[in-house]
Length: 358
Image (cartoon, rainbow, N blue to C red; front, side, top):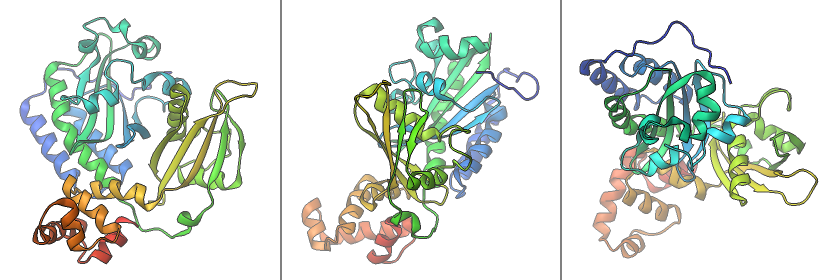
């Protein structure tokens, strides 16, 4: 792995608070601008270039249910390959994105987490030290209790990140989470993906494709793989879920936002037997409405209670039935529905069902 920095070294001098306040306010506005994910990451990186300088960075979206990274956006570094996937995202290493997502503080500096002994981190020994990186700052984008993405910022030796910068990254977590969450809302697309037959891939122990069905090739295009299979890397989400299945020894699943705006369900399971260890079978299929409804409800910014009520509406429950199940009055149910309609931009239950299940 070789970092490819554009331009000269960044200025690590103390950034004044007005610059950070300005960046925060502009990111706050950016998070509700309705941008697609790639544009949001690009613009967020541009706004943080001065407020939180770094030499290289990697941004990810995440499935909030499984905390598996599903996409990436890199700056001045190569895209993550299989070796990086096997090493950089271990939950057992310091400042894993899953740990930061669950913690009270959603950001962390590697040198602080290792108490100044960076060699305690496998990620540092295998990936960062060989390319002269000593400073790493990570953050998980947590909003309303769910993590929708994360970033890793890097500085060359002897550079590092300060506690003040760590705290600023924590403050940014919910703002960046709102932006990634908003980018998860589906765009209008044809119904073809919803009726497409599931596809199957068989991967060997180093994520080479052993066999693939015709429908799987079409699903791979939905995930951004448009070249000839085997001549370009597999979509990042497939590398991540295959590694998760191998390490856990059991099934793993993740939801990925496809290029058409549809959600794709990716299922992985280890394959026993055979001559090669570490083989994984992956199924690609259209995500079902019940599995996506909570995700879309959260993406619209619905509260936990509103998401619970929306789930009951999707089941066809009446107002009185919902009131009885939630131990609230029918009047309160109607009040919640009014708030839900306003957030989702609909005027009736029928429109709500159509929008959330789109």
